[in-house]
Image 1: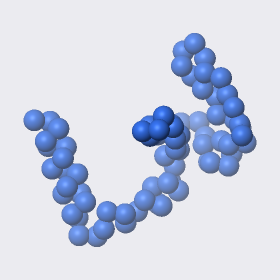
Image 2: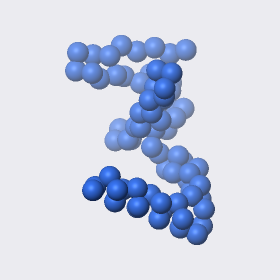
Image 3: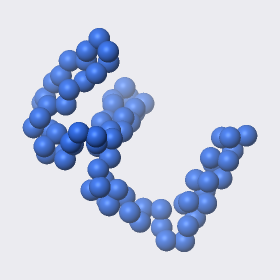
Length: 76
């Protein structure tokens, strides 16, 4: 298990071994997922991640339609 300390500015250094393994480089965007049990998952938004997600919503566009409808409701 790797550990790190949060700075007074709320910054966190990801250990180099994990950065190399996960393909995290300067400029890589990171997603933070909060789970109900208090766990926080840190996920790099790399090309590999998006390639893995490709096709998850199906090919008919139903997922996109649902997403756009939900976003429209949020704006109202």
